[in-house]
Structure formats: structure tokens, C-alpha cells
Length: 339
Image 1 (tube, rainbow, N blue to C red):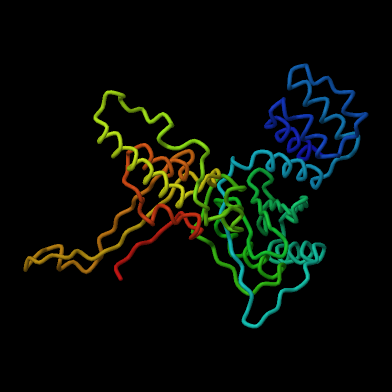
Image 2 (cartoon, rainbow, N blue to C red):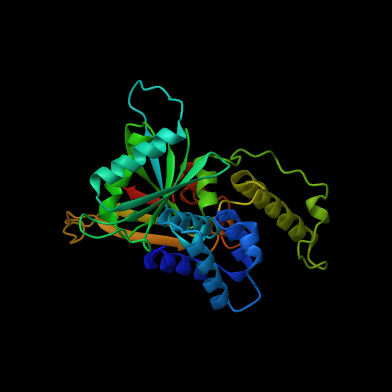
């Protein structure tokens, strides 16, 4: 095991929190149970790392072994990356082919290696018919940079792939070509959907939640719940408040349902419109370029935040379809133009 591989493994282990270290090392399955039992995980992390590196040297760990450890770490810490969604399309009249994982891997790897002399491609299959792909990019003259890889998650026999956003935009067309050909599709397009939460993106594109909801039935009538009303308040006002709260609850229920919302951090809206004015000679009305405006809503959990607006009295119900259509449209980037 040369120094570059040892350094790569060392940096990866140092990123892993101590409370996750044994779990990730067991999932890696490179070091045996007996070898791991020789490690004192209660000592300082630097000492633990040195011991683990020594064990890896004894087993002659390769760059492929090190890449597998990095993939497992990323599976545990998916939220550290921003994920884009790509949708692939079959050609007219093309039938769905039986998926062969071995053939997919070979084809994907060959396409990248033919285009780039220096590239490292690693695969790791999961239990949900998905394959994680790690690509360390190099050039014709430089070795692959193992510290700035691109990760791809592809679900077999589906038209969707999720990729970690990369600063190496020049490689995006090549990556798209490899995905399209290896999965036997005709075309690939980037969707207007992005998040740090891979599971939420998967739930949105695969529609793994129900957008049509039954009327919410509660065993406790709304009138019997605590509404935070003054008991000395006029009964007519109390009745009006109850009716309004019931209306807001019903609309919110119909729009969002009871289940937890997929987790997105933002929604972005780009508006382009011509200035319209009834005044003759308006400077803006004569302007040929459209007026442009960008609005961005952000929250640690945007859809749950939107769901709470009307019940909290911050916004009227129903909310604008531009806000509530995000999961159904499978978008959180919108461009709004004049019709």
C-alpha cells in the first residue's frame, strides 16, 4: 500500500465521528472482526487511526478498497452534498430492457475511461436496487483527484439518477453520456429539483407518498380541543373562530396531508415580465428587455414551514399553487414568464 492510498484512508477515517466508526468499518468489511477487536477504540482518535492504517497496510489495501470506504461514509452523510436529479428518456418506440447490473457497470466505466485517461470509477450496490457510483476525475495529464469526487446514485430500471453537485462542470456532459448509454436510454435532462436530502428527492421523483388525501377524521371534535380562546369571549366570536379554524385545517389537510413532508431547503422563483403601463411615453414601457426578479424561500424544512403558515395565521388559506405544487411538479426551481 503506497503513501497516497494510506493518506486517502487516513483522511476518510478522520472524517468519521467516533460513535459511527465501528459501524462504518464493519459495513466496509475490509478488516476482519478479529482485526477490529485488536483496536482500542477508547483511546485518542489519532492513535486509533494509526492502528487502522497499520492493519490496512498489512492487508495491502488498494485504491478501490479506499474508495469503498469513502462511499460508505458518504452513504451515512448524504446531507453533506447538494444533490441534483437527472431524468433519462427512452427513444420513440423503444421497449424497456431487462437490467443487467454487471453490463451497466462495465459500460459506464468503459465510456469514462475511453474519454479520460485518468479516472477512477467505483461501484457499491445497495439493498434497494440502487448502485452508488464514485468518480474521481483526472485529466489526460493529471491523476484522479480522490478528494473531489462526484457521487451518483442510480436506481436500476428507473429513468432517474441523483448526482452530487460538482465544481467540475466540464465533466457533466460526459457523465450524462455514460449514464444514458449504460442504462440504455436515449436522452438525459437535468430536472429543476435539488436538495441536500437524497431520501426526500427520491420520495418526490418516485412519488412515494400520497398526494390525494382522505378527509381527516379525529376522534376529538374540534370544538373540544384547546383553541387558545378566552372563555369570556362573545360566543358568536368563538363560533366564528372555530369555523375559520376548521376551514383552514381542512384546506391544509387537503393540500399537504398528515404525513411528514419531503425535506427541501429552498424554492427559487425567477420572474421575467414586460413592464405594462397605460401611460404614454413611459420609459419602462419602451424597454425591450424584460424586468427580472428572483425570489427565494429558504428554511431548514421548507415544505413543513409552508404547511404551518395558514394554521399559524401568517398566511391565508389556500396558499398559492406556486408554493404547494413543489412535490407534485417535482421542482423547486421555477421560471415564470409572460404568456
